[in-house]
Length: 402
Image (cartoon, rainbow, N blue to C red; front, side, top):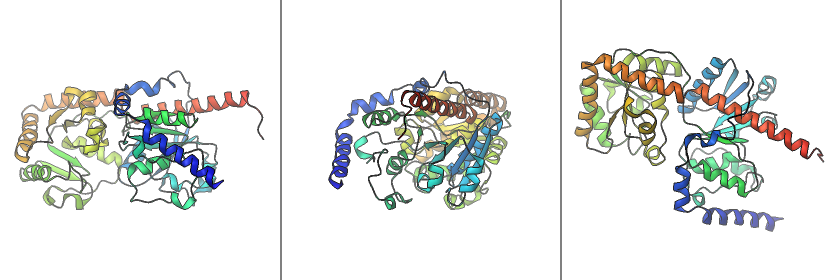
């Protein structure tokens, strides 16, 4: 038996090591965003669902709040539980959710009683995937090949390892990276039906109108990041702070170098949107991984949802989807040049407030058309109904259960 397990594990590793060529990676990235909806586009959904969201802090907490608000707008029920289902089993079973959404890393904290529940589990992964399969170290999600203790949550694990572990607990995947096609091919190789759609971090719909562009908002600056944590970007922020036009929000430790800009930590996700709307201008900058995978940060969605004027780095996703509704700056130039670009956009908005509002509203309309949480929840419900439909067909074809 031990030899058999070792052979399976070795075969899987060999598959990963030789499966993906650079050309296959490039082809996976060229797939149209809507590709992942084709299998579900004609699926009918119900008017109401029960959604359970298991979340953690930071961006995942804000996302859970946006999803919950989106569910409310659709007339659905929703419940948010922080970090683990352990100790909440009776509460969850009584609630009886149709499907559960959980972000990367939370899969280890779904207790067995909930794993066995009728609900479908959607693992959501906003971090860009390394599409070289041989680097992902997947485990076969159909087999428990390793001792349980290896699945204990570990913050130090690399995101791709967390992702590979999440697969084994998910009925369907919600993935930001276009490389999701490679994941489908992997599922095919192990004879497991793949259910998944491409999603990006988003915000619930609203009807905010643009306000006067008064200050530049910056939300949630991390301390360690090749772009946002670089000396040249920080120096640029120092210049904006000296001009008294920058307002920053998030963890105070992230803005130690510009304390006079710091306005505090915003706990409620809807208050983030209100704050961005009030200040009128939002500054958006992405991690290097976002650039490499043409993926957006949630901050662009918050800014567009807030109907604020957006000043953003030249992220390919933003350029593709928001076009000239956004003002751009180059993250790769020196501090002084970067400052002049951002400051130039700010000065233009001050001189042309009505034109700035029109630009903000154009980005807002693109957001409402493409990226609201409500639209994503409807897409997720279609995946859920497709899984139920396939299960029903399977039971009709193979009714015998030992």
